[in-house]
Amino acid sequence: MPDGTDPFDFVAPEMLKQIFDDLAAHPHDLLQIRGVRQVLARERAKHFMARGEIKSLQNSSDAVASFALQHNIDAAKSAPDLDRPSLLAHAVCAIDRVRLDAANMDVLSIGPRSEIEIFALLATGFSKAKIRAVDLFSYSPLVELGDMHALPFADNSFDILFIGWVLTYSRDHQLAAREILRVCRDKAIVVLAGDYCDDNIDSPSFKNKRMYMKSCDQLLSLFEGHVGHVYFRHEPDPPKVWMVMTVFEVAKPAT
Image 1 (cartoon, one colour):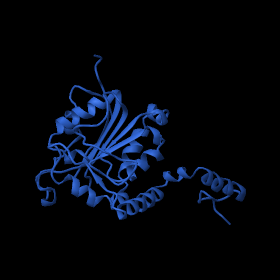
Image 2 (tube, helix red, strand yellow):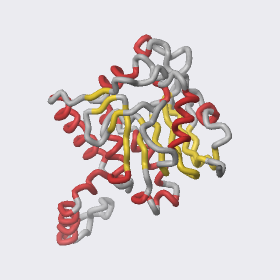
Image 3 (spheres, helix red, strand yellow):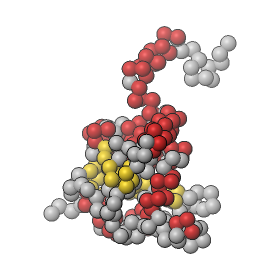
């Protein structure tokens, strides 16, 4: 006899059938399941890469770190296993004005590396028609080629920007920040995240040239004068906690 501790205890068979019928009618709802996102991202990457469909940006700026392109192509196959972008998407969708209007917001993902980031955005309510994504390389029809130091978008184009584990590949962080601000609308929400890094943990694989990310204040300082409300701070605490992450509202004075 069920004791009620399993969520499916006492649910009538016809209601379970309704759940499965709903999923069959709306299969994209399955993207809300982490394991499904990971399987889809892995299988699609395998498919496109096996066909040699990797394109790369030929004329990136000198501000891009020299190791960035090859390092991220190599890491693209394992990126779905981490599913890190879902952390960013959930943090943003906890903001009420985003949660209530996500499907109507213009979203930019900078440097997604893998489609797992796009799937995380779809899972949290953003519309595929409203999502743009740029990276130095792409194997996916969902990701365009682009450089965060010279974004191929008009001024004031986006309501939400995701920049996760990307700034470390920039040699000119202020230029990247200016481009991010340029394509933001006033009151846009910017999500920044990366892994803590300092002189003690840099490595030859990054040619000892990656950005050292140490605190939320460091990230926010790149946008000095344009930081409105700060919704979220996640400070690193090595050796157990490495992630640096902040979510803030952009303040753009009227011109």
